[in-house]
Image (cartoon, rainbow, N blue to C red; front, side):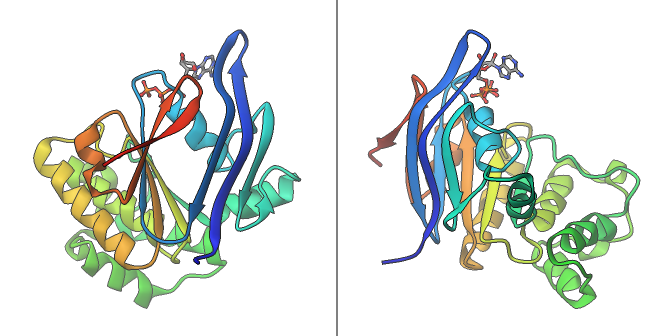
Amino acid sequence: MSELLLKIVNVGHNYGKVQVLENLNLTIQHHGIVGIYGKSGAGKSTLFGIIGGLLKPKSGKVFIEERDVYSSMNTTLSVRRRLGFVFQLFNLIPELTVYKNIEIALKLREGRSDPQQIRQLLREMHIEDLEGRYPSELSVGEQQRVAIARAVVGSPKLVLADEPTGSVDEHNKQGILELFKKVKARGITLLITSHDLSTLEICDRVLELREGKLWEVQQ
Ligand SMILES: Nc1ncnc2c1ncn2[C@@H]1O[C@H](COP(=O)(O)OP(=O)(O)OP(=O)(O)O)[C@@H](O)[C@H]1O
């Protein structure tokens, strides 16, 4: 049996009177792509933030490789550094070139740069000709490629992608899904949230977030 990567135990979260998550449980083993489907407002971004060490839940616990993510600020920061994030709006740093956007993520994750690794990743993502450009000089599809490269550099165990195809057209969507298959082939576990079931077709397992809980979806 493969090692447990993520374990969520009885997590609850509310914003004032709005109860978003309630007694939510989830376990994920290493390897593969897991999709979380949910309608708008179901709480996908809230759950994404809680798993990623960005939002402390009001109740319950989150473990990544058996470390209690919110046990101390140091643990939260160290777990967060070891995860990769892909955001819907890319969140690339506008003042940095493509190369530097990827390099800064590697330095945060591993404490050092590795030009060989960065260049290999640029080639794999077909963005090697863009390394000197700034995000404003890239197409949407190219920005998303850089965002994925930044999320996987340094080989984190888990990459979280929140609505990764939410702001791209069908052609770019297919391109992103192909890249996610490559990410999986690198041995990285991917967790994708989406309100679009066709985006989740590449997933090995899909869960629906509804009424504050996760429900397995038969594929
Ligand atoms: N900071 C906040 N303060 C108050 N309410 C919030 C806050 N963030 C989210 N909410 C509310 O919590 C609920 C869940 O929001 P969340 O963004 O997690 O859903 P979502 O499934 O990601 O939605 P979408 O698909 O539209 O992005 C919504 O009702 C939202 O209005």
